[in-house]
Length: 293
Image (tube, helix red, strand yellow):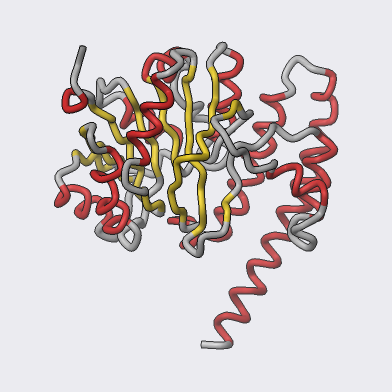
């Protein structure tokens, strides 16, 4: 039986304008994986800062893309470069507690049906960041989309984000900022759906896992920290457009073959309106921010 020193976690690290976050993330990586070893493969999506250089100086293997292929395709690129039994996907804007990734490996090893597992997540100030969520119904999704920005504690948004679990539990999907995959499961579903450039890629991956018979699990005894926004804070308008496009794509994928698909035009119209409001709000905030400088 292989010793812990023989067991490797393959980290697929996608970078884009991540230089500000990478040093702290990389500092926490080895203690998080210990006593296992970690193989770092970074896929850089045409950063103009030192993201790729920082990972290379750390000792990771870096693939520098000539164009931004999106998050899903980049993750698949990295996963193809390692034969590790466990594939870790973590954002550069996370900070990993000591032993956290090793603990996820240990939990997943108790059941060979666990294909995808994630930790409890907290923001840098210690407040909970929602993970272990349910796939939203049409009504919950619409209410959350309409009310979430102006009434964060509305019942639909609370249901959308789900209740915090207190023990290892099966969930519909987990946050994409930190996910561990059993390689067998990752390959069985064909990796990430690269139609999802960014956003909802983890939700679609979890859906694919469920449909293929794998468990998707949250282990709340394991914690990591997450700085929200990451690289997309440099491209707020692209964030809005991409988020709403991916939301519509997931609605269609989730309801494919069900009667709910007939509401797709209504969902598309609602997302267009919501997206326009979000763009206007972002432009206003930028204008106010420039005035205050």
